[in-house]
Structure formats: structure tokens, C-alpha cells
Image (tube, rainbow, N blue to C red):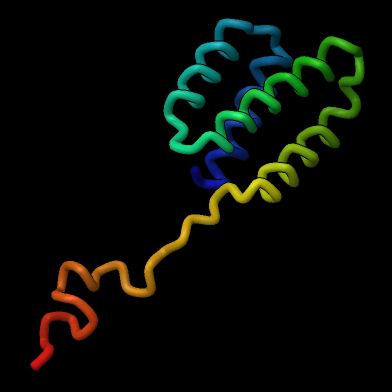
Length: 103
């Protein structure tokens, strides 16, 4: 999962929680958890929803920004978006290391 996608989904879930639209939160969370390819992202979404509901229900709405920043740091520490990329992504298409021009 890409880190930017995680940030966008946190904002969408936070806005839906602030407006009190439970069906949007449940629908978006279900789609995000099913669409995530790794277990770290699913766990992070569950932590996100739980923490945002906790902040909204206890009256700590002025600390919403700090919770958002904490979730961003948690996502970074869990390693979201650190997909190992090959040195040359087109090497397999062109025949290997020499690009299909090896002698």
C-alpha cells in the first residue's frame, strides 16, 4: 500500500467520523481493509478507526490534529510504502541485464 493512499484514507475516515456518518465509515473501512494487500495496512486501518472514534467520543476534538500526526508517524514506522523496487523494472521485458542485446 502506498503511504499517500493511507494519508488520504485517514482524512476521509476522519471527516466521516466528524460528521457522524457511520455508514460511510463502515463502508470505506470495509473497502480499504479488503483492498489492502498486507496485514500491516489492515491493522493500521483498525487502529485508525478506533483512535479517531475515541477522540471524537471523549470530547477531545481539539487534539484531532495530534492524533492524525501520530497515525502518520505510526504508518511510517510500520513501513507502509517501502516496497522494494528492482534496479531496472524493464529488464525482464528486454531479455535480462543487457536489454536483449547481449552477444
